[in-house]
Image (tube, rainbow, N blue to C red; front, top):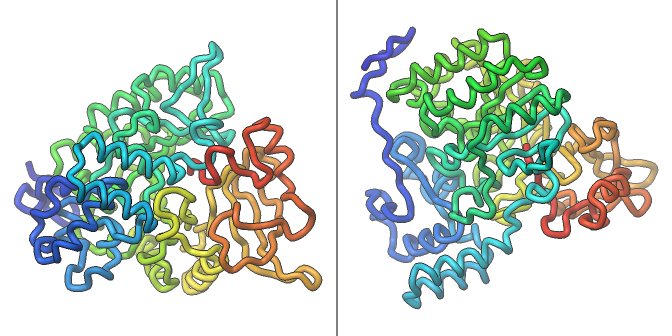
Length: 466
């Protein structure tokens, strides 16, 4: 099959079939074979705790192997020893070296995983919605009034995994930590019962891992229901970055794009929430053409990424990324702060420095790129933006505000934390004035006894859905 486009003819010869690289076969990669056995073992140790998956597009077109181990795309997709704390690394390394069986390896991994805050921000405790008959919808989250998240059970994987991903519990076989739902009927019923919801965000995993005919089942259920409150469908995806052929030459590429067009022709806004962590992901002909084809359906592409140590903690990278995104017709949307889960100790950037990166990048771009917001923490009470450092009287403070809140009245109310150049999350900050942040008592009353006075769950500290 040949897909005719305005710039390129995508054929089977120019568009490969996907080949996944996992813990089971990563040593078959020629560049990995050139590494020492010690380095390969380090990858095996990390990959037995945190999810690892790459593919031929990432390996062959995005990673600069001449710059490994410092290449950003290599760090983004391949396990690094420092992603586990030393005692966790030693524990898993000892289990592997002892010749333990698969069951023991899995038990060791799960023990470590449960110490990595697998579901931050009360996602399991406070964001799971219920139907009016009391049925809990574990494949959904509803944290903010206007938006609900939906986790199709068929989308609980990705074309490749980001090494920082806060959704890592979805991919490690711990079923009790997954969000997934098969019944689109329950989604429709919940939207009928909650007319305040205007936006549905399909997430995962990656919804674009699904074949178009399967994804169409969910989309058609929404469109056929003619819900008056449904204004926007969002799709959170890394497919443009990790497998642009999904929109070019996969056997369901045209069907996928036709489904997008069906949404927009229905009068519902379709927003592709695209994850781009580095400008390299925007550099190939295939991603440029994929963006072009998606936009032709009437869908809008918004871009987001956390600021990540070892990958993109440089204002020049962000400025170039935003400029390129605008050039390609995308809308810069969010700079996030790394969630307090998994390998946060490795990827986390202090909040003060994150703001400096944001500000120094922001001032290098035109107004068309200044749609971006950040740096933002998706924390227990809501999305908290770091506005900068200032002086109030004689006191140096960090200025914060809510972009989203569990109570909408919190939004855009500035509040202040004591200056702390090492803090990487809201739980590391103390109120600059008084003994509590303004929202804490109300948040505590929302969660009864489940909340510490820091504004975090007893079982999980910080984090939250996007």
